[in-house]
Length: 218
Ligand code: DX5
Ligand code: ZN
Image 1 (cartoon, rainbow, N blue to C red):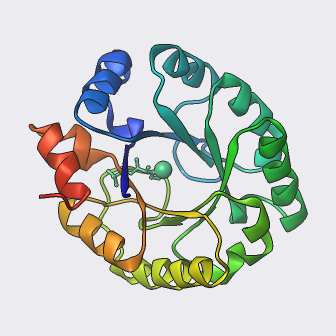
Image 2: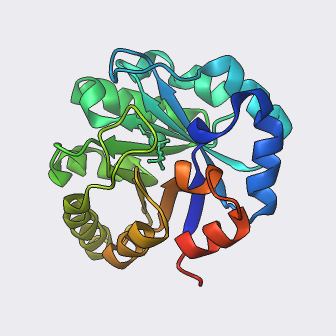
């Protein structure tokens, strides 16, 4: 089953509750919540208090993507604020500290994810394979919504899908950045089963139709 996770980065922040309700009723599976610290990426988005408010207004699965340095310092707070899954970038700290961050998320009873930037090889996830429920392959440079999909990242999705299948592991493979109905189909063919889409969903006149198309149902 392919899941579509609209990214709240493209929602109207003054009307988050309405936008969340809108994508939920349009058939979205998860919500993707982008956290940027102005340091790991050259942009600042939203953090822990807004996540708490989002948690209070929806029961949807919250997939939190931390684009922050030293995530181990904050993962517990994001879990307490209502994250169902916390994604940390492998580039955001040492291997030891990333492992510690993943363990902290697990200890809070939440799902774990590791994320790789476009220039990071897929092999960078290997040290974390035993501790993750999801691997996120960025298909744009993290930091901004509305960028162009990087087709060459699909090779990494393919490689990771084979790896996960060979090891018999139950690990989601997610793509994020520039995903729409056309590129979403390519992601699914390459083996992704969670598709993040920001501008494609929130910018669409017909969100029901768009989510179905991204899921390659139409
Ligand atoms: C980018 C974020 C994405 C972003 C995707 O750094 O991680 O989740 O919101 O936006 P679109 O789908 O517009 O590329
Ligand atoms: Zn994201």
